[in-house]
Each structure stands twice: as structure tokens, then as C-alpha cells.
Image 1 (tube, rainbow, N blue to C red):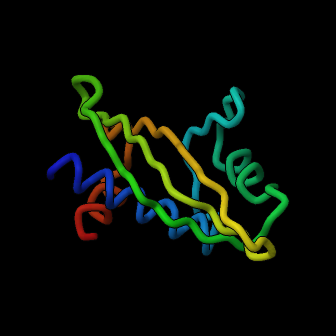
Image 2 (image 1 turned 90 degrees about the vertical axis):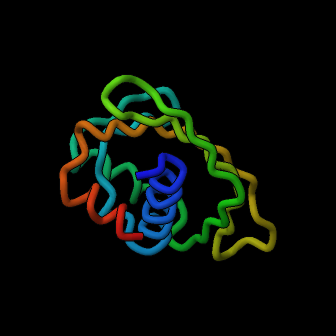
Image 3 (image 1 turned 30 degrees about the vertical axis):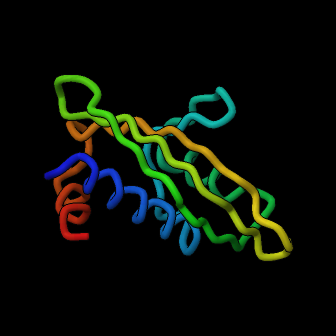
Length: 113
């Protein structure tokens, strides 16, 4: 699959899930220079943010192949709108996707998007 299409499919899936059902996200996570490991710890972190409802509007998804195992470095920028706020906040995130360790179901789901 085309790396650009795969990275865009991942971002769409990630941010839609973040906005609608955060507990369904679980992978290795670094947040504010702290590594968070294990599904329970990751879900706890993602659900501990001081807001419950939000909407991400992604404007840029750039990807670069990374490593021999098919990994990708994905840069994302856009806006985050919180339910109780009048103005959105600009966001930028960097994801390192390691396709070697993604389970086959996740890979197939991303290809279908």
C-alpha cells in the first residue's frame, strides 16, 4: 500500500477514535517526554485529559519511510476544538508507526479505509 495513503488512513482512524471513544486506543505512547507502556496505562492517560469532548481537524499529514521493517514517521498538524471553547487550538504531532508490530487485523482495517 502507498505510504501516504496508509498514514492518512491511520490518522483518520486515530483521531476519529480519539474524538469518539478514547479507551479504544492502545499502543506505545510517549507523552510529555514520558513513556507510557501497556494498554491499561495508555487508556488511563488518554482518558485523564481534562476534557471529554473534542474534535480534531487535520490539515496536514506528511509521512517518511523509516527503517527496513516498513515503519513510517508521520507528521500531523491541524486544529483541536474543545466542546466548551470558542476558539480552537493549533496542534502538531509526530507518530512513529512500526508496521512490523501492528497486528494483522489493524493493518487490514487501515487498508480498507
